[in-house]
Amino acid sequence: MVDHSKLQYPPRDGWDRAPWNRWSFQHVREMVPTAEVWRGREQASQFQRNPQPLERIRYQGESGEKSIGDFLDDTFTDGFIVLHRGRIVFERYMNGMNERTLHLSQSVGKSLIGILVGIYQARGWIDVESPITRYLPELAATAYAGARVQHVLDMTSGVTFDETYTDPFSDIAKIDVACQWRPRPDDGRDWPKTIWDVVLGLKAREADHGARFSYRSVETDVLAFALERISGRRLPEIVSRDLWQPLGAEESACYTVDAAGYALADGGFNATLRDYARFGEMLTQDGLFNGRQIVPAAWVQRSRRGDHDKFTGDYRIATPHGAYSQQFWLEDHRTPVLLARGVFGQLIYSDPAYGFTAVKLSSWPDFRNNGLLRETLAALNSLKCALNV
Image 1: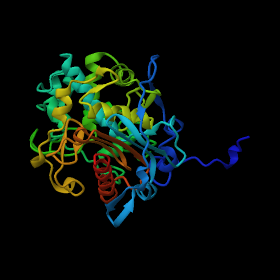
Image 2: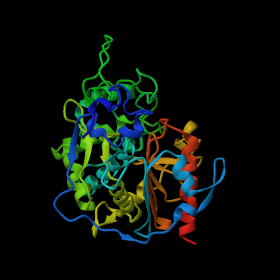
Image 3: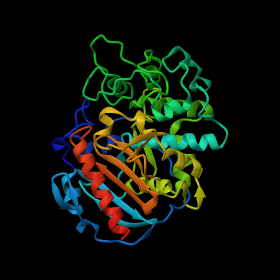
């Protein structure tokens, strides 16, 4: 019998941060309202397996040589999976996670939206060279006036948005309140009630559209609102029909939702480790998976090309040669590696040149940690080289 008097749940304000995130990232549905992303009725797509003892491989990390096993232990790992040439070669669950556990993706979920835009463009439903106001006319009264869809995809819109996670009054903190991740403060301020309110409140511009990259989580929500407006469907249904069912997902996923029922596109997606791997392997195979061309190959290939010159400042600390393109990070703009990245250590890594896909789900103590990110990239680069000897 469960003794409920001894259960300790995270506080309503701060459940998604350390130390609570070690538990909460696997229990999001117990913390906030969610909407299902249905996997459909078809049988799940199957992976072939070729298990290998990858935990013994050694690599040069931030503080010297160590094993992959040490790396997993030392970097707050919840789940880790590696595919080589489409086969699962390593799969590990830690910190109480298992193969059916839904884990919060944070900003890894942004990359799903980038792929959906590619699917919609292939159908002729959206034109990335068009102004975003063509699809969301209300944005003419915001700083998005004059921005093209491509600017929003690449996060080069020039709109002022404060992404400071530790500032309780930043724009990203307003999203936390609007999406119901944090209680609404009773401080007399005019806090937004929904994510759409956050978008409509962005009136200032810090640069010309297209001038430079600046990470703005809200850009993903702008794209998702456009997809909803175009299709007449809510985001969980869009992801179910156009991604999760075509991928042959094993489990239904879910999104956290705001008071208006909007699914948080920029970071509220939750899924299993293997289903994230299905998405990652689809990228590695240029949009092809489960016997279907889910997104045009040309769109995935375009996502691998980013403008390094616009990728400046602190963004180069962990990836000195990096770039950002169509809701993906690029490890090195000279290679085809795609990264879907989220705070607290969420990562999908796709390298078609090596036939290599990896997913790491984590619960770091910090939103961002360049040392842990560099450690992770070093480990993955060593793994893909070892597998291709």
